[in-house]
Image (cartoon, rainbow, N blue to C red; front, side, top):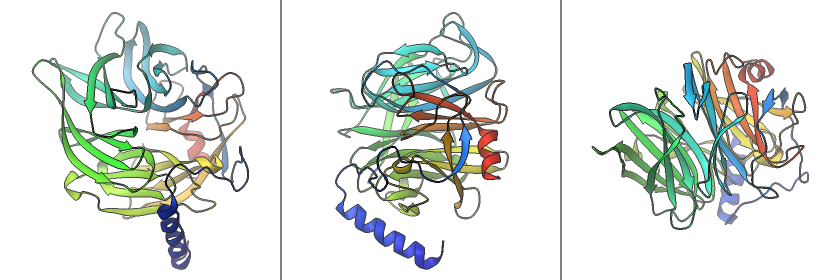
Length: 365
C-alpha cells in the first residue's frame, strides 16, 4: 500500500467512524458474499449449538496439554471452550465432541489463561463476557489440569464492571500478573488485574478505563511485545500498549479497506509459529481472514484466507475465533485455528477446526 493510498483509507475510516452509531453490515456484494483469499479447508467441526434459529455461536478459546488430562470424565490432551451467546458455554474435545455444557446465560466472548494459583494449585482460568441482565461483567471459570475424577470446568465467580453490554474479552500476562481486558459494545475499554484471595475467590482491580470510540469487539494480546490489539468494527484494527498507564494512546494498524478488512471487523487472535507471530482478523463483511506478521518493528500484512468446502462445509460471517501454535493433540501437531461459522450446512451455527499448517502453506509463510 502506498502512502497516498493509506492516507485516503485512514481519512475514509475516520469519516465512517464519525457516522457510525451501531453495527454496519457490509452491503457491497450482498449477503453471503465471500471475498478473495487463498483457500483452506476445515478438517472437522463441532455439533450445532443448542440455540436454534438465532445468531448464537460466537467465540472459542483453545487450551492444549503436553500430557493427557481429564475433562468432565474424558481423557484428552486439550479442549476448546465455545460460547452460545443465547445460552452458555460449551467445552469441546479436540475431536469436536461436546465434553460439557454450562448453561450460564448470555456469554459472548471467551478466553483462557494459566498462571493463576487458586487454593494452592495452578489453575486454568476461563473468562467470558457476560451480558446476562443483573450479571454484566465477566463470568469466570476454573479448570484443574491435575484434577482427577470427573474434573469438569467449574464456575468461579465473576468480575463486575460498569459496562452496560460486555462484548469482547481477552486475557493477558504482564510479568506475574494476569490481566483481564473487557471491551464494551459501545467502545468501552476496561482492564483489570485478576487475583485470588486467601479463600480462593476471585478479586479484580480496575487499572485502565478508556474509550475506543464506536462499536468494538475483537481483542487479542501479544505479551511478547506488550501490545493489545482491538477491532473497532467499522473503523479498523488498533494497537494499544498492554501497559494500563498508556491509557487511550493507540496506533491504527489497518483501517477498513476493500480487499483487506471489510466492515464489520470482528474477532482477533494471535498465533506463535516458532519465532514468528501472526495477528489474524475476521473480515466479517466478506467472510475472509486477513493476517499480519507482528514480531517485527511494525505489523506487516501478509495476505488473507477463506475457508472453503472440504471434509466439512465452508465458513462465512465469522464472529469469533482462536488460534494456538505448537502441538494441539495428535491431529494438529503445529497448531490449530478454530472459527465460528454463522451458516452451517446442517443444523444451527457451530465451530470449525483448521490445521495451522494448511493456512501457513496456503499463505506461503
